[in-house]
Every structure is written in C-alpha cells, then in structure tokens.
Image (cartoon, rainbow, N blue to C red; front, top):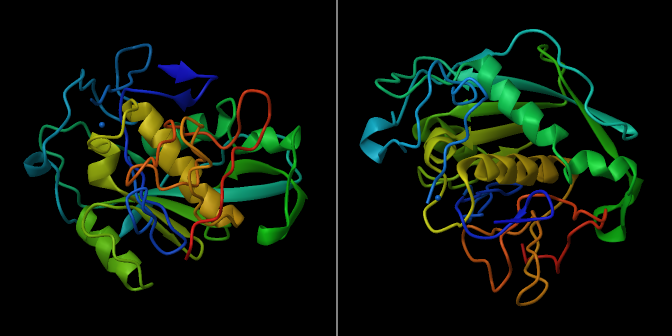
Length: 270
C-alpha cells in the first residue's frame, strides 16, 4: 500500500546502505513478498524477457563473476533542476552466468536508476524544497542528476555479484556479508542478490526496494549518514537502515514526503 507516492506500507524490500556499508541491513544494507515490476510490454526493466512474478532463489543467483564492469553508453537526460548537478555512471559486472534469469544489461540498470531519480518525492524534490542541515553542512542544498559514460563521473553506480561486493567494499572496511550493498568514496555497489530478490521481511515491492536502495546510497554520496526512526507510527527516513529494524516506523523509500517535507530522524550513532 502506498503512502503519498513512494511512502509505503506492506509489500516488500531490504536496504544496506552505509558510508562504509549500509545496513538497511548493517553495512549499507539493502531491502521482499516480492512483486516484480514489468514494463508496458511485459518485460522486467533491464532484462531480456519478462520474469513474471517469480523471484530467483539463492542457488540460481551467481555468487561471483569477473570483477570487471561494463558501463552503459551514451549520456542521459538531466533529471531535476537542483543547483548541484550530480553526474553518475552506471555499470554491470561482466561475466555473470545468468542461467534462466533474464540478464540485466547496463542499459536496463541505467533505466531503472533513472526511473528512481525521476520519481516523485525523490532527491530532485530538493529544487523546490532545499535541504538545510547544519550537522551535515548543508544550506539550502538541492540536486539534479545526469548519467554520463566517462570516468569523470562524480559517482559510479555498479551492479555486482555478492563476492565482488564483499571484496570491493571490504577493501574500504565495510563488511557486506554476501548480502548487503555499500557506498564508499565515489562508488556505489549494489548487491545483485538483493537487486533480484529484495529483502525478506521488508514489506515493499521489488521496484520500491530498488527505489529505497538507490535513494539511500545516493543519500550517502550526497553527505547523509544513517538516521533513526523519529517515533512509532512515523514514516521512516530513507537514510534509516529500515531492512534491519523499522523501530516502529512505517516503511518508506523516498527522501521527501508528498508535501515537500524532508523526512528525517535522529542521527544514528556511528
């Protein structure tokens, strides 16, 4: 069920997100009853053919691949009108043995990220409702986004197998445990298993899980640390590690509410 655009209650997700690793699950964590979103022609975004509503099992999802990445080519449209333009590059790990799982191409992964960034209540809402927060040194901050295919991107968003995520995040001191995603420096690593499955017990749809983990990890890149639940029955901040513990809050995968309010809570101890 949706609460104002992308504020949600029961259906499924799990977020790991951290400046090191994020837990929406505990290093930076990710977000499951999983519902697979399809495009108008019946395809799953980024795949070669529709998966229907079947969620691949752990055994079906490859644990490791080459450790190198193929980037989506070309330049995307500018999303939003915020003052700070964030240029991001999108890539998918090479050498993944997809088996019966439809392959997520770099172009499809890029399409999914663009849909998240362009959705209502996302980070681009900051253009009309700038964010001021002294603790993270933001004064009337606002953001816009554009995908590029050069190494000069501000941030690189990568879809990778669990072993590759563990290795690369681990080198930066983040333990992703084969499960979580993480952000370090100018790199966001999204765990392939969570991207395909969502996170058991987190009540949002799979596409909303995608929105949550992308918004959470981009939030870390923009300067936000983890937040806690502001109170029982309140909507959880997207920077909360919701898939680990909702703490009495309602699930939410967007930075802003429908009225333009930035959804925040107490900063989590780091």
